[in-house]
Image (cartoon, rainbow over all chains, first blue to last red; front, side, top):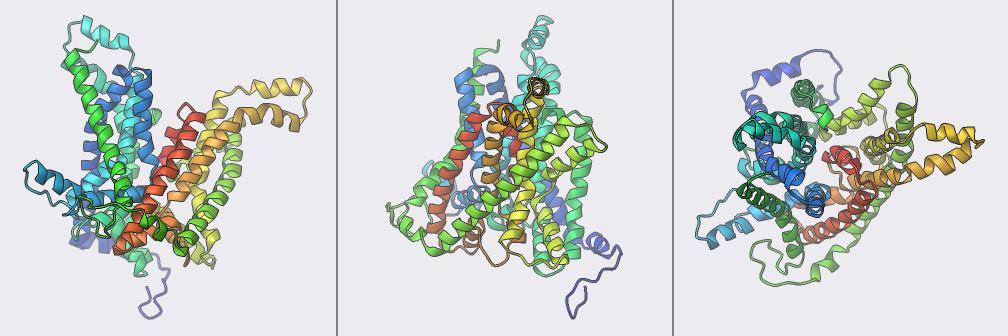
Length: 243
Length: 269
């Protein structure tokens, strides 16, 4: 950067990466981003697995279609609007606090915190997890579960030894979306997060705003690198066939 | 198979998750009719007043720009996406796998990366940001949706159909009109609808490729960020939820298989 003309000077070096490495603030932002992305993925997996199981093995044709459409439609309604609605809900004068007070619980006051960011990401990406998990569970043949039962396995053992390993590619396929989308986002932290909810995306966004494109590019390379590693592992575990 | 208690528990869990997904969307319907311009709960009284306010010139011109961008980007995507799908599905050539990988890769890229990359490319090429740069930006992800839909359809239809048509003496145009088009048309419509829905909703790439103009999502983003005009945002949100539901339900009818699910990969941006 030329400080006078603020024009980008094209010099090849690693200064931008060095700056990233040396500043503690950027470490904690990167950690926060990856940590919340992992927490969102875990929450979505836990929420989605029983739903996928219900769709694949318990629901009849009509209720399956109903759940399928009910999961799919929110995914297609505007992302921005879904974030905005949650901002209204979590606000101090919002629906959540009001409902809690009605049932005699203390107000949560989680609006504009990392909890809000985590909750909203979990909400927004949940369908991305449900659909591949359902796909993977649907492909598990009934005979496998019967065989497990015939061999004397209880429900829990069947789940742990048969169902979970076979459904894992679906969970990982879903996690590619939930993880990578959270990793690269800046809208939700910006609109619904607090002062200490900055994500990598926000720093990138602000750096662009202040004309520091090279530094922005360097920081943007971090989620790309994390994702590249993640995708390689996912491919190993056979998640690509489950997409 | 499963014990009764398990079945009940799973059904209840699913019902709760569906409620979790839908209660927020239902709430915005109420907020759109909120009389107060302070967005707090519970809502005291209802009005349709904000629907009038929302139909102002700023919103209308943003809506019109969004529609123009969406239609044009979808048109470009339909042509390029289906040509790419034909190439990959029908011919074997050097680098075919790479091409199909490169076409799908941008799904994994965060929108901000695509946005910065396009922005720098336009700056480096001394191209002024305009409606056309937004269209080019949107076409990059719309192409993927169309490509995936058409490719899935082509993989399931047999190439011997085309050979049979040629053996029976049809020329290229006739084969296209009577054999290829009927096979592809619903996949194209579905892909097109999804591409339009994505473009209509896009914020991040649009932010980096738009000049001074506002598309509808950019306008709302600005309002939400500054906390201005929130009643108007509520009304637009209500209208947009209704409007996006229609093309998606249509597309879902047209491709009963995985078309929509695959398309969703790109919805993420």
